Image (cartoon, rainbow over all chains, first blue to last red; front, side):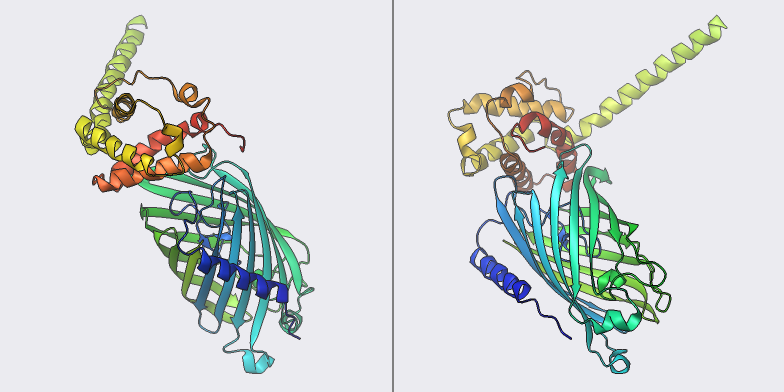
Length: 289
Length: 147
């Protein structure tokens, strides 16, 4: 049942090697925090939402990227994400992510350990700079998602075990906007038919087509090393047997320098496969090269 | 009718005048927080040393009259921050027209300015307020294609 993607595995390995080689090199010239952090789907963003920012710190004459490891512990599930992204001249971002949602409670009943998914992402910056442009920065992205354990989407009645999300994101930093602190605002419009982000497959009996969903984030930089804020992600509700809810989070990110970021969050995922009010802590560590 | 119009006009002028005086007093705050003329000159001096050590941008400043540049940039920041100075140099488009400034270079200079302010104990609040005034110049300074 497990579909392996050797390409993805070796891709991440190569990126980790590049990262360790470039550990002491300068990760790029964009200012601290302007790469955001790594989202659970591998794209640069907050934790739950992809932003218009491109991964890492490469500016228009540079290239760079990130590797990240993330973990969420919820009531009846735990999520692990391994991911990597490269940024070419702050124009294109390519990302890979491997998600593993451990079925801590449902496992024995379903005779499955985990829902597993690989995500291949690409993002292009269309216009602007998050710091300097009056209208902020705008990017268009795609996330192609493939389940590695088709039994899970099948069990909940999803129509497909793979699918693609398309999103348009706008991000803008307002200097000194709140008590003279910098405020980062992001809005993302996503076209998707993914169930629980794709971990429960794509499409269902209620709806089987792409729907537009709004996602939004706000963050305040206490200084250039600390960012705190909140995120909201609207979600489709395609499966009548296992209704799903929108996602929320509160986060605190520490960016001591351009090589490292550590994000802690409290995440509210709502109902997942009939288990109510899934919530819990999330931690993500990201390195930039 | 005429009287009341005149009254409203007078009141408006008075009120706007009053507001201007108040806002002028407040606008001085950033200048104060940067340490007035002396503080700004120290930051700019520190910035010039940092530029000279930064291979991303040092070449753009090669051959400049350092004392003149220091005075001009200090004037400009003093003026922008509400201090009692008048920047009389070229506008930003004119002075950067032939430099081919890239986003990488603009970011590098910004980084060195922030580090210079940090080294001189300028508060995060004052840093952000100055950056808010400088950020809109990006479009006039960066003149490579891109967006």
